[in-house]
Amino acid sequence: QYLKKLPSIPMHTIVTKEFINLSKRESEILILISQEYTIEEIGKKLFISSKTVETHRKKLMTKLKAKNAAGLMVKAISNGLLQIDYPK
Image 1 (cartoon, helix red, strand yellow):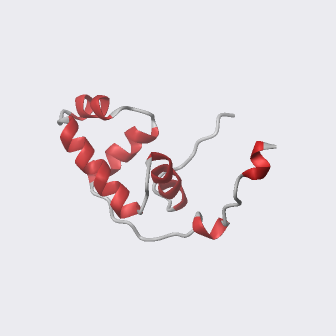
Image 2 (cartoon, helix red, strand yellow; image 1 turned 30 degrees about the vertical axis):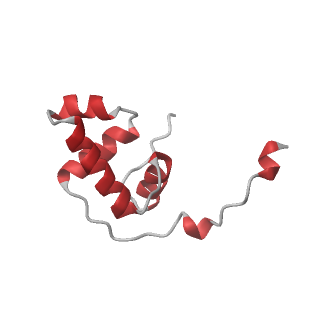
Image 3 (cartoon, helix red, strand yellow; image 1 turned 135 degrees about the vertical axis):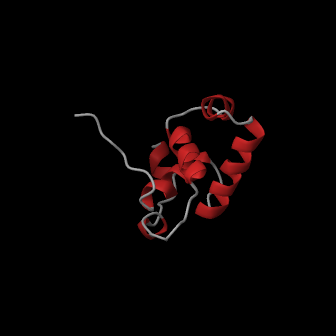
């Protein structure tokens, strides 16, 4: 019943492809976000401060026109920046 109350999402809002140019560091951070690393964990892994990671994350959100982390992942996948590997 709950799912019936959710608004339908027009597919054209998800599958639009745009050319989005990411820096190497932005790509690395996008991948780590998709692997559920926290901002602090990403900073430690890449030897940069959490503040720098947050700045890159904000730039990613702007470039992909995302409002939150879920939107960032949806737009990254729909624009071919990330791929989903399903277990076999």
